[in-house]
Length: 382
Image 1: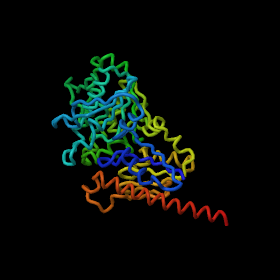
Image 2: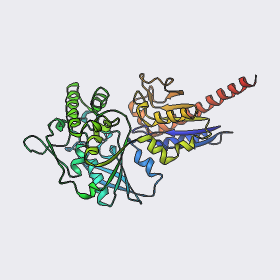
Image 3: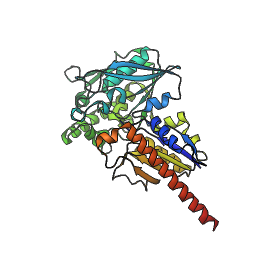
Image 4: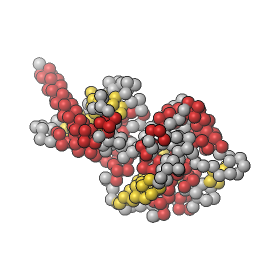
């Protein structure tokens, strides 16, 4: 029996590689079981690490501005490939995980620090940046990134605007003369982890701003600001599915730069051999920290489920939590196991405990599936 382990990260607890390795180890030595591992990412946290594992190059670490300007700088890293491609993720400098719960302020958070990472990569010679979106603390439509890359955002009086969500509705003019030629010559591949829109009921403000600290009134203010950005960039960009990813970062980037917007999971799968790994598979086990209604909107495990179903391979999931709004049977899962239910927050985030619980769940899943497959085989022989 060929089992494919295809875990995404459990955010803040374990990486995709750690989860795959722990699960693989618990299956080693089982008679008749062949195990293949494929690390999963979708453009969010951990994407750079997964992509870098298949590339030659080196990690670059530098101090940069975090999501909130008034806090201490953060040390963020990106991967510079030998071919000049820079692999960067928004979560490294502008991620929600960098802020304590009581400091989440989506009206003031900015992607400025991510833009500084990108500028550093270009100063080191990169002319192709792969930018993974997801896990952001922001809703600035890419205003911070573009400010770091030389654009100036001015209000009606010609005053410079601080690049954050609360400034979006006040943008009157974008000055682009300060964008250097090195930036204009660069190609940007933007990897989205959700297929949400810039505005509307399925827009980034209404879907994601509350978890980033927005009150209902602030959600409406952000929605108004994003609608104003939509007027600036035009409907062709604003109505593009995925433009709302990471607080609308693609909007201003696509308007001002040479950008390609791609679903993150398929891009990663094309690099790490996911489709080939599924050939001849009998069972796929995937998972992430939480399965919820966003899982099938472009997230890594959702993309694994979709690809496996296309190949008629049964899929099971091991995750931290299964939200009540996620119908795992309708999604096409053989089984879904939640390993963090009943645990305290500290216990659920403990790396060793997570890896142990996931390993145990994977072993039980494989046993259950083997028994089920044997039963099916015996029935077929009757």
